Image (cartoon, rainbow, N blue to C red; front, side):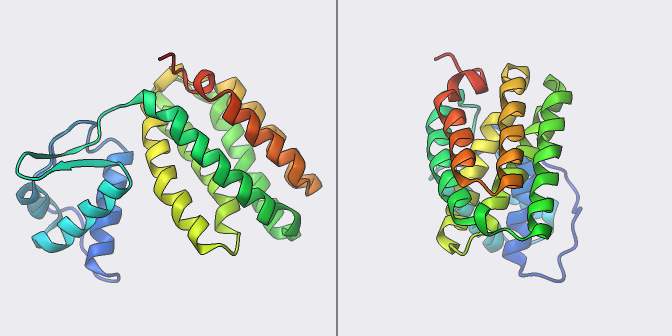
Length: 223
């Protein structure tokens, strides 16, 4: 959809560049800014009510996350749908998730384990109830559940990389609609839930490796 023409956000409490980044990040993920849509600084300035500097800083970060493509003096646009990239993104993310579960799952206290299991249950339910029009919701539940492990690790670099690459994976997967194998994904979340309950990092690793080995079928990618 076109960039809104009037300011819709009032920035007060955080650094302006971070607020602008969060707003653009969410606009891409929720479809306010469509895949392939051209974005222009002057339109973003009018919409967000900020100067060009925080906009360019936010765009640079989004380029690093593969959510925006920019060619100097040519165009800046939201990255287009690229289903062929999903298997390689998923391969990298599974390696990160496997490390995160190994660092985290056996040390979770009861409160954290319960919170993790609730996220996994929500993800499984979203997959079970998912239809093509709710792909973004299902993938967002997946993101929250899987990011739990890295967020509860003591490895700051791991958390940064999971966010950066995970955003690109979430964006591309959300565009796949009903081609995702929701039953396969649901079964993975159920297996992870059992692993968390038992504090079994080996079982969690096997569940994640199953995602990695079935990545193309899971996401409906045939090429």
